[in-house]
Image 1 (tube, rainbow, N blue to C red):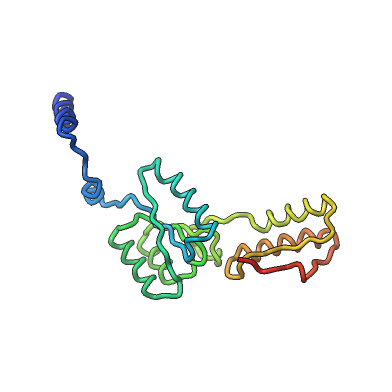
Image 2 (cartoon, rainbow, N blue to C red):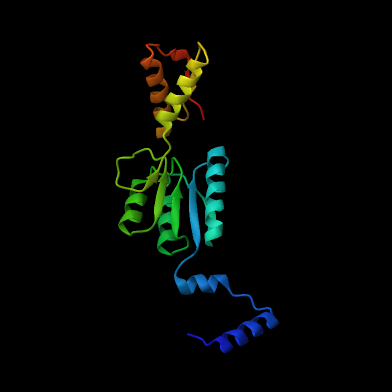
Length: 194
């Protein structure tokens, strides 16, 4: 513990000299990067942009930065680089956006090493891994019911990309709302989107 007089003298000299602490040295000493890695396959998507904005808004007040990492889940070299980054502590944790959660080996190794990560709307929600997901099925059902209450007779759905679990949840909610009222869905109005 440093005495008050010493602390005041040191901070005064620091201000006089214009001293600015070296953040990289501080991070090295603490063993933390204060960086969260946002994994994405398509950095131009509106979804990734929204996730990045939310991550930045939450991370900055807590002293963390967010770095976007482009990943092709089908490329072993990308998976190796992710694990290397985590082991070297270049990031403190990962946010996985779909379809980046489709890397079982990476997820298993991060989990085994107790390295922090969270999956956003993962394909497989049965694994004992941390994830966050919207209530897509319920949301699509409520939306479809609302359209029915407004008197719309032709209702369709753009369910999203078929590699995303949420697309099927939304389709199930849409179909459940129609079925509850005895309405058969018009297959021509069910589309796959991006």
